[in-house]
Length: 48
Image (cartoon, rainbow, N blue to C red):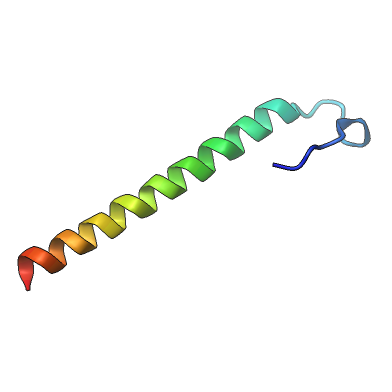
């Protein structure tokens, strides 16, 4: 993620926690996509 300068942002915002949450979201989206593609491939192989 880009290097953010937090001096211009809201002082009460926790930028480290925001970036950690964003990283978790990206990982969950990536593995969720891999899982769904795997299910589709499994169904294509076994049902056709």
